[in-house]
Length: 265
Image (cartoon, rainbow, N blue to C red; front, side, top):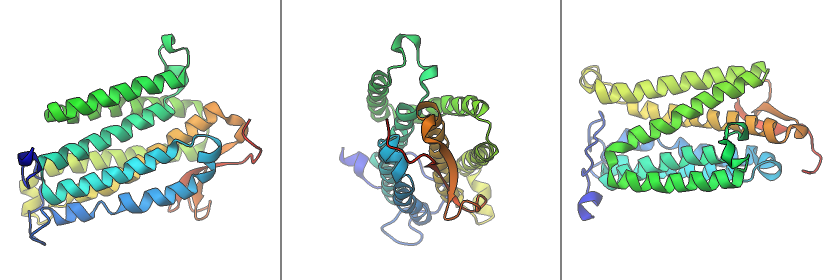
């Protein structure tokens, strides 16, 4: 246990030079690039206040888990410990599976569940606990496990988009997919072509990954929250809008608003 907690006990070491800025932070820029994980969720909590009150209060759990991801990533990159690596990967797994439990459309449930969302969430929780156990026993399985969870999400997003005839939603979906592609590319290139990035003096692609993956994750939350509101509560008139001004769709922050202010039935 002490070995797993010790600095540098992880087999993963990103391209950034270690302890080049402060003697007590292994990867300084990879550590501070997680700052948005603590800035974005409180803002989202406020923007989705009406959605949480009338449609799905559990969305607030997503904001908490995103901050947990940020804290775990800070711990991992500042220590490069195996325990920090496992915390980071397990936190990501919990966010993905929490989203599945909240928003996976009933129409895609196995027939045996008969559209029972409570039972589906119990199954997802069990799957989450099992995945967490496997993550600590076989750390090498973590990347495979997380990719296994992301692929169905992409497929469901595509299928739900086909059911919604809204140009604004389609545009956000395209932007979100582009963010995911660029983010994953940064992750892969940092791991695979480190010698090149060191040669050009830019070993910071993992920092870019942290920023882009947060934006892509948030975009996915907005889209699935919108799809779920349209499926479960169309009478509330859910719409995709932007803060601080709805016309700022190119630079604003998207969220789901409700046109109908009548009490939830």
